[in-house]
Amino acid sequence: MDFLYVHFPTSGVDTWVFFPPLIAFCVSFLTSMGGVSGALLLLPFQVSVLGYTSPSVSATNHVFNVIAIPSGVYRYLREGRMVWPLTWPVIFGTLPGVFIGAWMRIACLPDLKNFKLFVGAVLFLIGFRLALETFAGRGEKAIAQKGKKTGRILVTVIRQSLKRVEYNFGERAYSFGPPGVFFVSFLVGLVGGIYGIGGGAMVAPIFVTIFKMPIYTVAGAALMGSFVTSLAGAVFFQILGWSLSSPLAVAPDWMLGALFGIGGAFGMYGGARMQKYVPGRAIRAILTGCLLFVAIKYMADFLR
Image 1 (cartoon, one colour):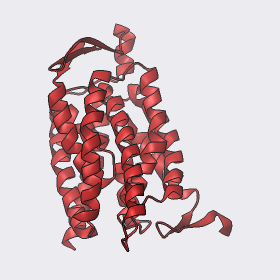
Image 2: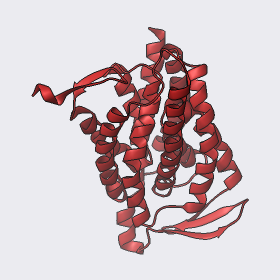
Image 3: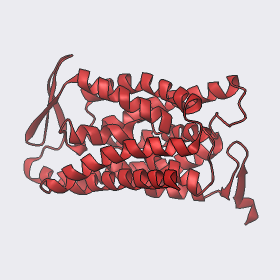
Image 4: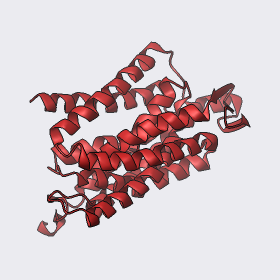
């Protein structure tokens, strides 16, 4: 069985070949229900368990997103729950932010300890706000149960302009301003570029808590935004790896990222398919747990 124990030269990781896809499958199955690819939790796993501490761990997380996310996006598209007027400002907002964030990760935050404090503080603020929203609100039935009564669990855009978009979902109307989504997405992309998660892990909770949109309608847009920005981020990190003469690894570990991505693709498809059977409060609780777990762990690591 020693032939299944693999060394990855770029990252310096030594592990069983089936371990990364198995972990990615389990993580992505749960997180994809909330529009999060699972990269949020895979980064601390790579750092703390696999010992992958160079800046290229962020780039490898982008590779995971590129391979894993399309299956989840496909499922949300197939079920008619992709809000395109929301998706486009997410993509165009996070894309420039992720480039700036990738540069900041290398130039300003190469030290892992400072990096953990920065990420922990950001995620804690978002997670705390989401926790208040989750446990203060009323319980929500799964949309599959609602669909049995109303026959409508698809997203229908009522009207859209550069200033305002309104859409129906179930028996309610929701609205948002594309400029506000664009601005928030840029800030999220900045942080996501530094962290190596594409931004979806933060944009989905923000849409739920601040913009008051149901998680069932934002998950697809968040994943699509993460996919596009992670594709750009992976390419950008690779170019930096070719051009920079740094003792630290910058370019992604493509083989390790691909193994994570394969497991994540299966997990993400399953999670996206199961989402409509899970109550909204439970999905928000999953998001809250993911955010606060990583935030508290990273801030505690900084104080050691």
